[in-house]
Image 1 (tube, rainbow, N blue to C red):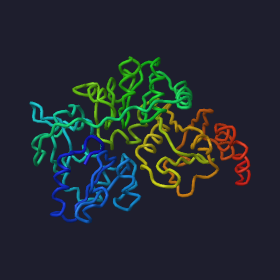
Image 2: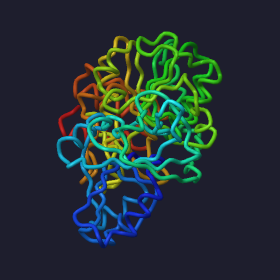
Image 3: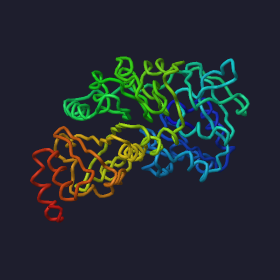
Image 4: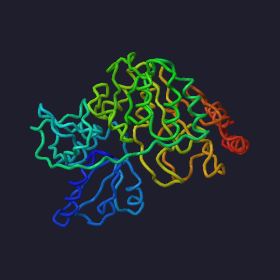
Length: 401
């Protein structure tokens, strides 16, 4: 099933209702938004969930041992599904069929569109699903059946940036040239960054997630995409998640092109776009530059997503830059997010060799081509001032300084 609003809600309701008649059925999905009994192991081996990115509803289920989590880079999920599952049926929400006989997968393309032609599709046609264009079109001849629904899409309100997020965004924005192509995730810092770029010119959009902030950037005239090498003039994405305003914006909008994630997140595709800039958040960074972005206090919180995909691609782009952003502290300023070593149990999402710039509200640490001593010095300099002496002492004990 697709992630987020691509989930066919009524179909899953029916499958759960018939779970006792099933045996060994596995539902593979990233970032589920609807809480369900089967996520929490209610039907035993009859029906179980396999996650590729934890959400608020699957996180407690994973911690309780009631669902599985498969480590992955987002760009590789289509291959993983083809090679490691039976891939027997795709269930997906879709917009109504058009006069040419095509369904649109609407808010989604993600890993599911890469399975068109490789697996049969059964669709839930939602009257409120926006019709979008690109690689997410399924012809009526490629589906084994469909049902109808009429339900609103789930909305995610953009996070309101605070002072620290705005300072971080400002430092990133001043390092983005006109004509750059952007990828940004979701959250306070990306929202602040996109707002800070309205004075730029001819920015391009090539991002796994298209959020409300990109709509404002495009409508302001800052993001024309005219200098992009690939799909000039179009915003390229693999899924959208945000408010109804965003869903209305992408509906029948030929300037937004949806492509499968194995194309959008392919580091080689990203690298071939000049001046590519990626911006992604992390939870903590150690003095080597290793980023733990999917665990909190040593427990799994999400998964890798496309962070490493875009970091690798942006660094290989001609004139490209990759930014990892985070507030300097957590727990109301009592804990430094710049640490001598990562928290016990933390998982490295982006390796030290793939980290370009790290940004907190206290500055920018440039890590590429720097020695361990230089990296540690730069990262200590952007930590909160009250933790710098402690970090310096730890770095000396570890022979980094």
